[in-house]
Image 1 (cartoon, rainbow, N blue to C red):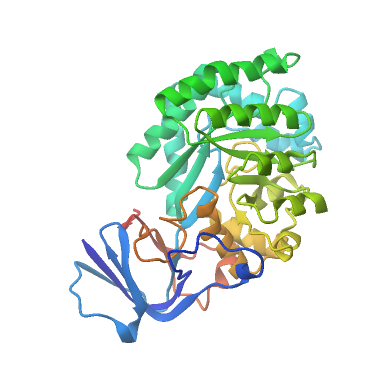
Image 2: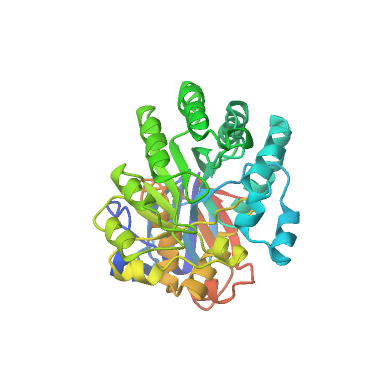
Length: 412
């Protein structure tokens, strides 16, 4: 099937296939074509250019995008959208003065979600999670990474990863699965950290590898969670089972996790609300993508990742939602882009780059997603008529999306 989109006011993020990510000053550059056309052949972008160069073709479907902008669908590289129930009460507890750490110490937080998940059937978990996935697709997300980490038992973690696998089979959106068994220590292992780490390494990882349920391994490296040494031990074990490392790091404290991530060639280091000069220096000239989660900072009222300092140091940066029940119960990448501009002082060009091409890199899918490139997936956002793409972060409370395409098909 051939679909032709004509009279596009502005076609954003037009890239050569060799561009996998952008860093430093390059993040301020967003290549565009005014008054453009784009051709979708089945699920791929097959052609694009200026309307004055429009070839003579006979598409099955033609869409007039007069006054509208087309850009790649968002690539959300950090989510936890497979979870059970909610943590609304903790939201109220924070309003009443408790911190995220205090709630966790009282048995809330990740352990609360783990309890609910282990009480929920796999079918019910799937049914709850698919609603969230369908919502983010309608909001313009065309690729998403989903982490486990609310099981904290062999059975619970496998249940989560099987649900993620089933979602990937049943929906056209590209889904990457991450094993995050090292999200927190279960209560029964509170005084026996190595016992739980042994469970991860000796039972969870072999079972996950046998069923091929994950591509990445992640660890929450933070005071009160997993130490730097524990993080390194778990990442090395994951690598031995063929999993690529990622790390939750520097959310509340800088304790050396970034350095371990770089040492273990992590694809990304995520959160980064607290960054030292040494942390920034450690990321220079590496293949590791820094990932900021601005809506998490918004929801928890904690500092935002210092995007300006990182960009000015020549680093790349990606942004993602962190969609989860405790610290970011939203998968709206449009709000993430706006918040990156409003609170992190990223320009619209930088934020869009961070949410598309760099987000794709942080998921290992740069060759198929994240830019308008011939041969890449036709994952696209067609906006409503708007004055310019600045309107996307500027009108942060409005839904400016007209149509979403995933693999060349319109999302209902």
